[in-house]
Length: 404
Image (cartoon, rainbow, N blue to C red; front, side, top):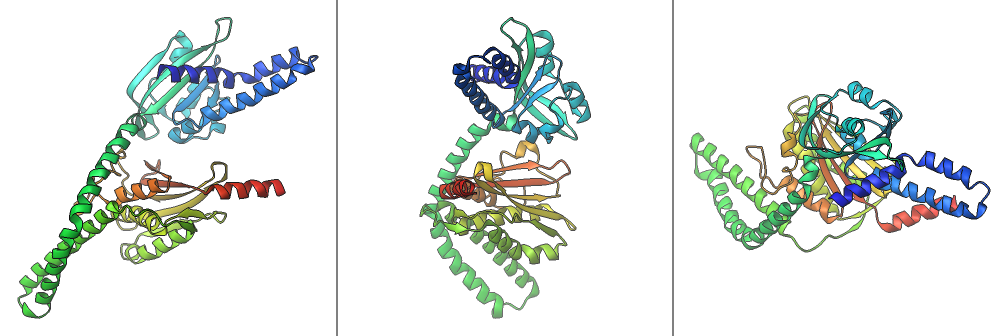
């Protein structure tokens, strides 16, 4: 861990203050053209270091000695819900006040006292939300030992426990698959027989209204058991994916069409914003459709009448992937539960099986994709899925760019 932080500090020193360094070296080497290739290599390495920091899963923010923000990576944009263009070059304290970010600033402490500071599970209020962070801040020194700025590295408690949670989930999936493979069929077969006899009784034999109500209740519960068994069998399925080229937008359209009657009856609006430039993905249609419908079903169950669900697809060309966001304006998901919603058998619903989102997680994982959930600043929750595009798509794009 200490080594990682040292690497971040070294890279930050180069990235944050490389412009001044590059300028001074340029003047020195102006008449020494043979050294210019070294200078250009330095510039390329600086850009590489910038990419490493910018794509880090941790929040990284740096300021100069005047407290001006000189680096604000992509993860910081995501956590604080602010574009870096709004922050870079601005006073750090003003940035905190303007965006209603309350909490101790160890970054400014490091700048002021020239020491390393650390926080653990520290609450920070961002707008109307409270988030908890772990992190460290470090002063940055030039070769003369003068403070030239400070860098802050933050990760939220979700990130800290993510690896542990992943390992626990894998173990749970393994146990569920073992149980399902051995028992699901043994339960389903006699259950089908029981259901058949109850349906026969309900049709003609029983005239008493109360008894018919009881029979209908039994049938509903049997249907629920059958649903659980079906989901268990899907989890236990090790036959592999049948991949083909698919249009993600069409899968979304199909899922929305399937849920349209339920949404209409509950006066819930489903708004689509589907990207027109979406490349084809290589995936298993049934698995991905199941993942989409699991999230849609979860959103519908979370909403009351007059609710709204927004579905958006997008294409991230530079990362060679496509994605899907499903947002609702419901109550949202408490932060402490966001790590648990994909665990098998975890549910907050009275009639939930706790397998729908677990199945969704597994389907996305089998496609080497990513899924995450977060609360919206305006209320409600968003589930976001990203799926990698096949390498041939990247090659095609590069060829097209070269041809153009």
